Image (cartoon, rainbow, N blue to C red; front, side, top):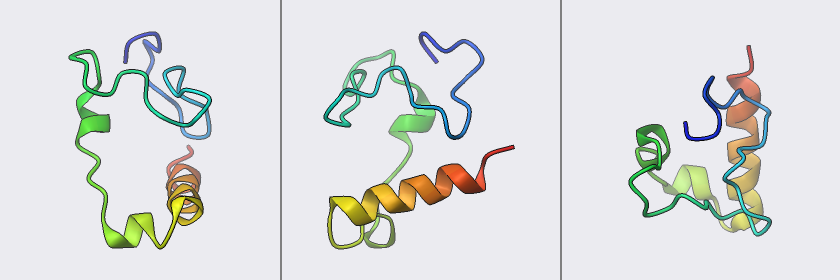
Length: 65
């Protein structure tokens, strides 16, 4: 991952995450395939932004070594 040579550990904020929680690499060739491969679903996104962030937070928790 650009700027994170060891990858992004679970629970660590990505250095490319902007203050408004958008990805600074979105649409750029440097964006890692793991980020581009994450496909939203109704289960992941829930009914609003808060639900989606809660789902992603839980995913991070579950993948923390």
